[in-house]
View 1 (cartoon, one colour):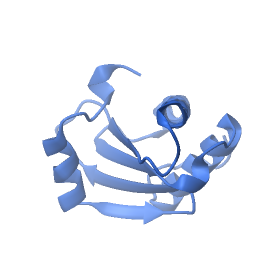
View 2 (cartoon, rainbow, N blue to C red):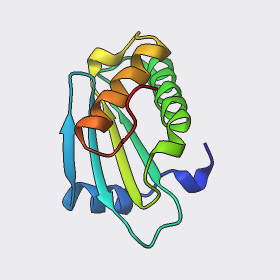
View 3 (cartoon, rainbow, N blue to C red):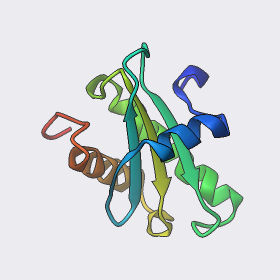
Length: 116
């Protein structure tokens, strides 16, 4: 995923947190905000130390990024997303993580596809 698709600055994270709409399931919390001036969506990730050691957190982040990248064509272009991984996501498979991301995106009414 290109760096232009990522939210990295703490100020950008804070904007989404302050003016957010959030949805959650057992594995993820998703905060989102509409940004009509953007050319493409942006993604911010937060994986706490409760998920595991550094290599476990990096592993989870990679799986989340890959899942979002596979859903890229089905996401609106004018949105900022923050995905917060809960500890239950540790040691889950890529397929399971993608299913849970799809589930929470549908709950947030962001993803409009049926089965992918």
